[in-house]
Amino acid sequence: TPVALTAMHHLHVELGATMAEKDGWRRPAHYGSADEETERLRNSVGLLDISPDGKINLSGMGLDGLLSRAFGQKTPLCMGDSLVLPLPESPDGPSVTLARLAADEMMAITEPAERQGVLTKLADHADASTQAVDVTSALAGVAITGPSAYLLLSAVSELNTSPGAFPNLSCAQSAVAEVHGTFVRADIGEVLSYRLYFGREFGQYMWEALLDAGLDYDAAPVGLEALAMLKR
Image (tube, rainbow, N blue to C red; front, side):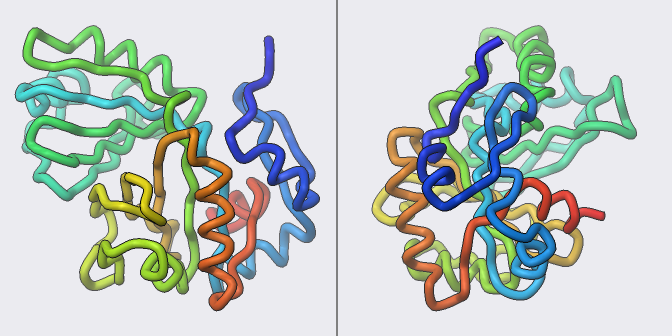
């Protein structure tokens, strides 16, 4: 089975990343010391390539009914809010994040390994008023994590992502470094974290723009090992 590469792959290699294969993708495990990268996430800001996330665009005016049928979610999800739901078949295992971007648009975000199962479930429960399209390969993604994350974002986006104005589990669409992006705030425990998704063709440009904007905030890339340590 071929291993997929993200749009930022060669930049990670240039930065000295030790790469690892996970869920069919080649991803940075660490760039230097995973302990130091974890401290960066706790004390300043780190950037993690999350392009392999499963990303499913949901459209149509019957989205609330689709969520009810597929996931048992009875309460409508308000625009600008997101919700983390356990998958019904594994309540103690993987989850799906649902972000309501507009009255007729949502994004479903999954772990890479869960993408196909969630897509199938949504497609099976869709009707004439809804559509589920896999956009995983079309969108790159970066997680901006740490107490200074919103300061970095304020340098590249007009969207106010300060903790008070953009609470945990908020979502929005806005320009980032003059590129259309989708934001989902998804804190990791007590640590501030934003997930940013944008067109894959802008992957290298966005990675470099975020690193440049983060120079004043001690921003640097981090790998999967630091993320795993932060979640413990």
